[in-house]
Amino acid sequence: MGQTLTKTLRPKIKEIQVSLYLLRRNKLTKVALYGVIVLLLIAIITPILLPAEIHINQDVNPAEKLMSPSLTHPFGTDELGRDIFKRILLGSTISLRTALIAVGMALLIGIPLGALAGYFGGVLDEIIMRLTDIFLGFPPLLLAIAIASFLGPNLNNAVLAIALSWWPWYARIVRGQAVSLKERQFVKAAKAIGTPPLKIVSSHIIPNCVGPIIVQASMDIGGVILTIASLSFLGLGAQAPTPEWGLMVSTSRNYFLNAWWYSIFPGLAIFFTVLAFNLLGDGLREILDPRTRKN
Amino acid sequence: MKNYIIKRVLLGILVLLGVTVITFFLSRIIPSNPAAQWVGPRATQEQIDQATVELGLDQSIMVQFQTYLKDLLQGDFGNSLRTKQPVTEELKAYIPPTVELVLISTILAIVIGIPLGLNSAKKKDQALDHFCRFFSVGAVSLPTFWVALFLQLIFFRGLGWLPLGGQLDTKIKIMYEIPNITGLLLTDSLLTGNMTIFFDALKHIILPAITIALYPIGLVARMTRGAMLEILSEDYIKAARSYGLKERLVLWKYALKNSLGTTVTVLALSIGYTLVNTFLVEAIFSWPGIGSYIATSVMALDYPAIMGVTIFSAFSYIFLNMIADIIIAIDPRVRV
Image (cartoon, rainbow over all chains, first blue to last red; front, side, top):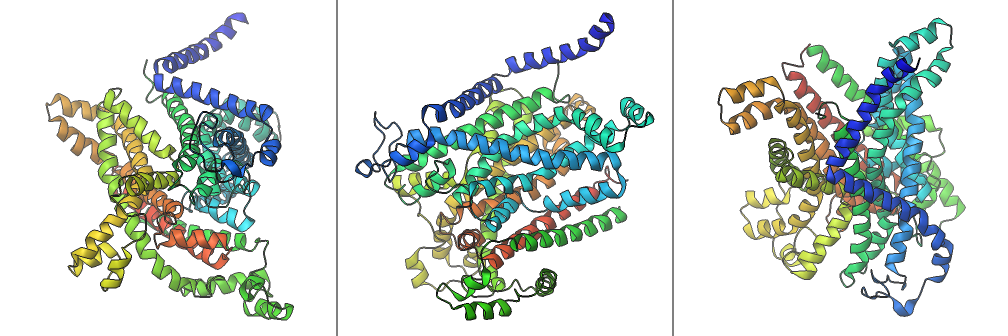
């Protein structure tokens, strides 16, 4: 028993070791990983140290409006005299939380539909896949813009809009996995002992798709953060006085020619966050992809 | 092959229909009352009721959908709630400036993106590759709307080299008759030989075009690099190299040709991205295109206008993707 366990485990351990080795060797990916960890920490700690309600209610100070960066206000102040640095920190929580929820919702729609399509095939597969074709027929971002504007402009609707326009990607990946999984021995065995089809999908197909889908989802976080910021910039996401980065850049449009810091810093926050996630995703793809992986 | 093309066209038509259905039913979950919007804030209940009948909003949703579809087939998108003008006419005025911007940005994406990706793959894991990888990931991570403001700060506020926005200088607009042959200002001014207008239009298009092109440049470079890496590890490339063919020939002729599929797909995708990027930056540059149009319509909850832009953009995107798929299918290796 012990021997067979090590036998089956050994290649997997070896694989993980190789991945870790490649990660160590790939400096850019390592830096991105640290960046993402720091961002997550900031997003978790800020609301504890700096409750958003207190900030929104008490930080307005017209006497200090549109002040350039200084020691007391490292990123300057906005048109209401609020500290931009503080608002950017608060914004990190909003961006990361909404992005995670949006991706999570897209997974909740995409995984079951993809698994059903792949496992059952036939008419159901045809219907679900043509539905993904239709959703992907919209240019990127456009469907999210349309849904968000029809649902009414607020952050929750923007998150819903992103989930509704993102799920087809996950459905397609899961379907591909499911099609190959259903030919595997353990699925055939489950079928032979009379496990109901839906039970096979939920306890054999879906759990075995989770790996690749998690990798894909983590790669998408950057893009989703950017989409949320874009929707907010268009006025379709977060509304004032929420310290959302895209909204801050949008508001800054009225002042930026004389107050460069107002647009520059929130934009840089978006850029570095999305960059960290994208670099990490890009590196992970390279490390995990067997085609580019060479020992 | 013929079968594939027929199937692909049928799928295209299905997707077009699906996109129309989704857009229409989405627009009907709108919480506001379009009839009240149509008659204005000070209307009486009677006027609102009358408008409800006039706009056909009293009919069942299926009847409304049939009417919309019938009008759409005749190229009628209905009337804008904000301006009361036919959306089709407004689109006709706003589409050419956007097409001009998308064309220039796509050309930039191809001319810069493909060589960047190719050289990056050639020198994998060297300084250039690291730079290109960083650049391409960086470009897709930049918030486009922020880049627009950033460039305005530098080139208008800081250096004063380029105008803040618009398609032409106001003075030039008054002094000259604006040519209108194709609707594309750069082409039209060249055709009529009016160089004053041409150079002024060029000066105005630089900032928005660069802003919009950054994302597709990164995307094209990234996808070209990926495709080339796979191709360059194939045996026929090794064979070509061992025959002593010039490296340039191997790369640009044998390898790049085989990445045709990626190049064509990336082109369709790239146009899709530039089109949507215009929605984010046209308003910043006061560019009179559909991007500005949809940004204003979204704020006014002008649903016929939003639907018009959505359906127009989706249709062009679906059409481009269909063409791309068919071109790839003509590739002898894909023929089944």
